[in-house]
Image: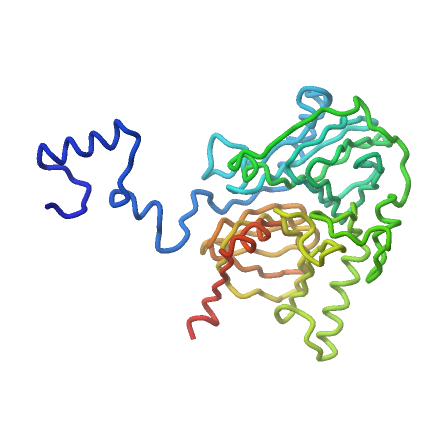
Length: 360
């Protein structure tokens, strides 16, 4: 007998390993470190994308590439350098900058993948979700859960850009994707201030009796900036008054929720918003699962895997699973975050490690 080294130095072992290969087999003892690392060892790497660069490229794309059937969307995916050959920002998440020119319309379609839009600047575009026109404005989170028809129309002469987040990599890996074309334009070109979904669902603590069944994804299509801003401001105000309201000193945060369940807005994507006081800093933490952040306002730095990166308005960065990160605010610092938390939680893999606390 020979030790389980994977080294074949006898004719019998040579033949055994040859038979493994011929019969599409692989012994565990030759690959344990790859299959079962001591801690997560992601192929994805930390990375920062600059908003000014992204917007410039998107703007040039708007001048050169028409939007319409075929490509459907003028959306440019952020490719993680550790995942070459894909358009994936992490193994479970897809993130893109989408650009719509003046008076343009992106035709309707639907797909199994869950999607959202987050607007860091601009206005004038309506996203139409199952025939309901939803205004897109700065600071708004807008949902398009899986298998909902959706398209976009720009009512102004000015272009607009935003970020899209989807669970495309996870959906592709699990082979659950379907796609269907819809209307060449959008089914309702109105531009109301308030969508029908908001009129029904955007009342804090109140639920219509016509909608008592729990929904897999939130029926509220838009989470407006004025509510997010007020919630974060009140957390910091309560902290000033000596009440426990923030997650860390000087760090206010909220999670967007499904009003029918109190859970995440979609079954595969979690969305949050974080606000740091000027001069404050978060603890270094490791988390199972991957996340993408975008700076909404202010400036600061992120420490990613021991490397510090300066951040300004619109910049995006990715935190792969178990890569340590922390934030430091130079000015008042607002950031939007989305991650694969619902998948990780439901599968029972949730784990967070804070060296400053857990090593005591």
